[in-house]
Image 1 (cartoon, rainbow, N blue to C red):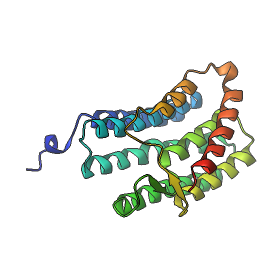
Image 2 (image 1 turned 120 degrees about the vertical axis):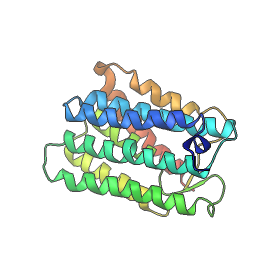
Image 3 (image 1 turned 180 degrees about the horizontal axis):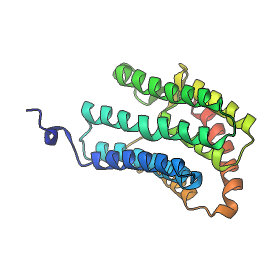
Image 4 (image 1 turned 60 degrees about the vertical axis):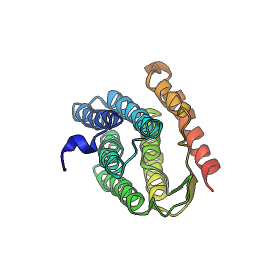
Length: 212
């Protein structure tokens, strides 16, 4: 009755990949390769978008899958970006902002898991944590000054725990936006800073468009 095979679906393979990418990113951070770590988090953002898409297409969405996805998001989009931004900035006290970001992300996931049945279709309360992780990565890859990095972390943390309504971009259609993120992974280092800064500004602007 409680066999794991009863709960696991094919789409959960991508969730396993999400966890693996998050752990690999943290390993690269600990070894000083922040560029590779940032790119792996971006790939995790892509896989997170596709697991939901395939679950909906195959009609295998479940409460187990949702909780499994949320727990994997804690690693890939909570802990990994927090460690990335802490390692990127030269100040020891950045650890407090990093902890705040990770805590805000986990709180956002916990709130979603207990309220998703009561929220209207096509609406998120608070900014989803994958978008928060995406913005953190773009800020780091864009080599923003430390003061702007700190401001971005505070802003992103607030958006995740606030009560602002955001429109869901996820539908049964193919998630084209994930391919845009995947394109960022392939950008050569020579052009990465400029492209990341443009993408950061574009995604922040998009947040206000998505706000309901």
